[in-house]
Image 1 (cartoon, rainbow, N blue to C red):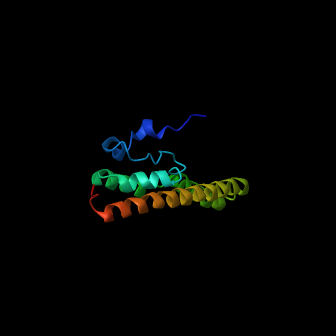
Image 2: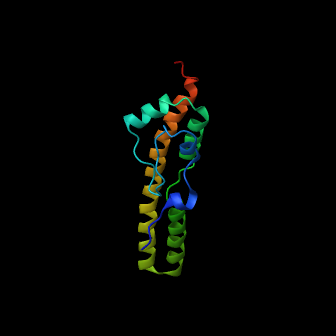
Image 3: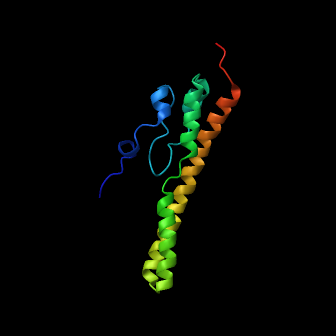
Amino acid sequence: MGHLDAAAVWGVPMYLERDASLPDMGRSPLGPVPLTRRYTDAILACDDVAAVAELKAYARSYVGVAGMALVSSVATIAFGLAGRRGATAGAAVTAIMSGSVVLEARRRARQWEAIADARLAAGPISR
């Protein structure tokens, strides 16, 4: 089975190219890396507002494996209508599991987005 390398497919997020001091949220279909105190401090200390806005946009667009949740939900209905009980059960389990991954990915992404919002609302950093 192949390995999904999102960075190879979509490239490096713009906010990382703009300001290397910002932490990497990760590019996994399973969701962003968990937010830590060190990551929070780095975002709040960033004086490049455009980079923080790009981080926020990246976090907002995170949907994880939503396509799998949609496809497996449709497959559950189709197999159910076709009377294929085993396939229906398999597709339903896949839909439930991928739906859980999407919820966790969005939960983590919202945490990153909230810190970016706080930084953007704070205005310029006085030094």
